[in-house]
Length: 299
Image 1 (spheres, rainbow, N blue to C red):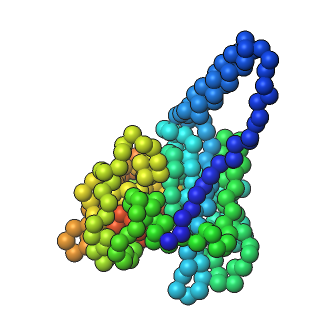
Image 2 (image 1 turned 120 degrees about the vertical axis):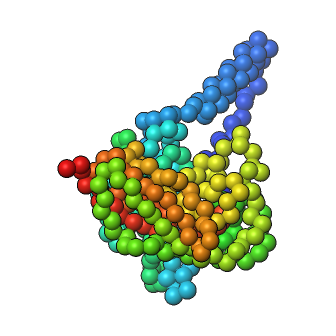
């Protein structure tokens, strides 16, 4: 099982010179305490809006045909504001073309394992670079096939299902959307989305998300794609491209029922083109289905 540690800068070691005056020593220590308190306060500042989005390279996976998947996520530094960055110079992948099915709508905070880009088995030592520019800042994530970045089911377990080993084999669910992946609908008209999910029934004892400490903020608590408590298998719908303020899912998280079917209904309050993504999720591994919806204005 591969473990990944995303550390920050190593603190600089500093040596304090001895001072001859006890008063000066007292003032120096007080200054250090005040500086540390100010630094700690600054680190705890939460920005509701106005911050940029940072692309993240999660790692790479092996495919049975010898190719590889480069896996990316992101960090929206805002706690409340969701950000839209259209495909183009401000949201691009290279090489291979600007548009490689990356998201354009970014939910708040840390969202992991959002999309995958398949690269050929002869990819070699090249980097796949995802560039995002928002709020006047440009950030890049570099996808590479360095051995350290290989990820497996254990990586997903540690990041999505809680600590520890899986303890049993788990295959990702497979999902199929009923009907065409291209839909047209009018504003405020209901659109039914039905997904059929096949799963191996594992993990049978997935660590419950309700057992985590809700006061400890981490990727699991921030994730938009996560099952509700008591839901072992479900489909979570998100806005992948388009204005999420105009989209309402009922429900957003649909449990898989008899016959492997998970159903939801979506409505749009504004015309436009939207890409919706459904994650068929067993709590650790997942499959995705996409549907593109063209919403007509009211005549």
